[in-house]
Amino acid sequence: FFSVGVLFNMVAQGETFCISQNTRMLAGASAAVLVLLGASLLSSPTNPSIAAYSPAVSGGLATVAPTSTLYGATRGRVLSRVPSAQRAAPVLEEDIARQRNEDESQPAATASWVANAMTIPAALASLAIVLVAKALRTVTPATKAELTGISTYQPMASDAANVPRNLGANVALGVATAAAIGNATIAQPATALSLPGVPPSNDQVYTDAWTAVANSFIDKSFNGLDWNKIKEDALAKNFQTRDETYDEIRAELKLLGDPFTRLMEPEQYNNIKRRLTGRLTGVGLEIGPVKGESKMVVVDRIRGSPADKAGIEDGEFLLAVDGKPVGQSTQFEIAESLVGNKDTKVTLTMQSRGQDPRDIPLQREQIIFQQVLSGVCEDVSNQEFNGTKIEKLGYIRVPSFNYSTAAEFNKALKEDVQGGAQGIVIDLRNNTGGSLNAAYEMANSVLQQGEIVRVIGADGKVTSAQVRGRAQYPDIPLTLLVNGRTASSSEVLGAALKTAGRAVLAGEQTFGKGQIQDIKTLPDGSALFVTKERYLTPTNQEIDKVGITPTIGVDGGLLDIKKGIPAQPAGFCAAMSKDAPGLFSGPSPPPPTAREELDLAGLSAFA
Image 1 (cartoon, helix red, strand yellow):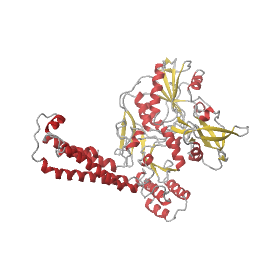
Image 2 (cartoon, rainbow, N blue to C red; image 1 turned 60 degrees about the horizontal axis):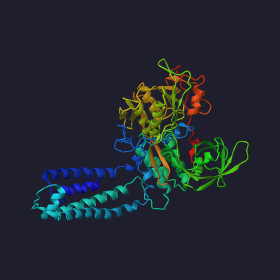
Image 3 (cartoon, one colour; image 1 turned 60 degrees about the vertical axis):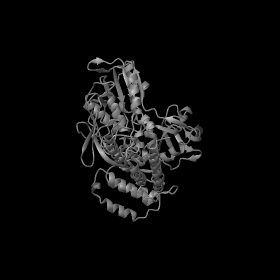
Image 4 (tube, rainbow, N blue to C red; image 1 turned 120 degrees about the vertical axis):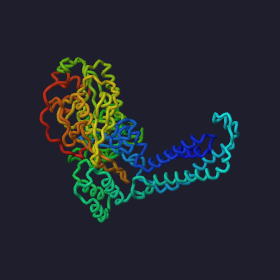
């Protein structure tokens, strides 16, 4: 914007070609607008590159469309949450709505001191543009006529007199541009200077965490706390280690009374980002801790991954990596040792129940998580919609929402419809959320009109996301299969389809997570998740701590993805061929039970 603004400014002053006075006036106005836009973008906390992650949901969700700024009304970011494994606790799917520009774009103000050096080359570049434009003034009238399409060219009498003034004006604009770029770079979110290769101080990490809460937390009373006094008392402790710093941050966050405002250490945050993108270079395992024991358990493995091809099974124990025992390491620390560069090798010491340990050498590969699984069940019993028996039942398993989920869902939906499905079950059991943008796009695939979600901020202002009205399949009968671990973005999708009368919800009361977290990357690579907003159903009903009530009740044992109805196409279809519960019509749901407690320490990790 700045560069185009400079060029428009030169056009406005007649520096380039022979143009009319009206055109110069228009160019001058455009120059001012473009320069202001450039300034606002450079000075805002938005990182344009973040839009590539999920380019639709930003700002207060005033409009949730690919062209909108859905990370914040004035913050072009994407409402998203981190995908988690099928068996993860509901909190796993982090609401990475408000992905701060420091999340991926910079190592916490590293080398911010270089910013001033940008002023000189930027100014020189601007000067070069001006000189090129000035050189064009020496082109012959005939050539100018050819370039501009003007048959007769009469040099302006004022041209020569205006050269010094115009040149000075553009150089001044170039210097101002460069200074703005330098200042914007220096103004990146890290609040203290961090030189390359020099670890940030404990005070710096603490101060950035405290500031993130001060700026973003939805409860501006901070649960009745004097937040400034807390900072003063904390800094007086003179933290000696990073662990002491983390402990202090966690203790203060606990006082806020919000379990979703929390600290993630670097290893855990790295894992969250891998889940969000759906890609990693590693062995293809999902691992979790074994309470009270120095080993990890394989929660799941990615099909076709090195671990899967080596015959590692769910439920096996990981004892050591490259000969180093797991010991007291967290699952996230172990996951960091399993990921690495493509084609590098790592040896896992594995043990099946009742068997001796064995070493398994693996070669790391680039892995893409397949989020969506689908199929069409041919032999279906006990399923009917509005009195019509369903002979062919489509099944789409969505375990979580990441940046590729919506596209995968649309592909699966198309394949099921083309395969003759007369109704479709979308399986959201244990789906604890992910990218809210993915849920929005999925809703748009089947909803022709209406509202998808409402978001309310700290100021009480409510904004809404509307349906675009270009649904591919607005009529095929739908059922969303849900359970007590269906949470966050999954609940947004469920509430939108249920409110519009577009889908039946079958199962039990969902988890009830209706909050959106802002993410602040701290200077040492850890991150702070801060609850900034909460969302409501299209009819202004609370989701947080309440959940969504299904239309049809299904026995809780059947909703267990390990012991009940399988959460993959072949197993699901086999279950539907027997005396299956009705998923499109059936009994009312049982009364909701208390939602499970959060166990952040027990979350699984991908590697």
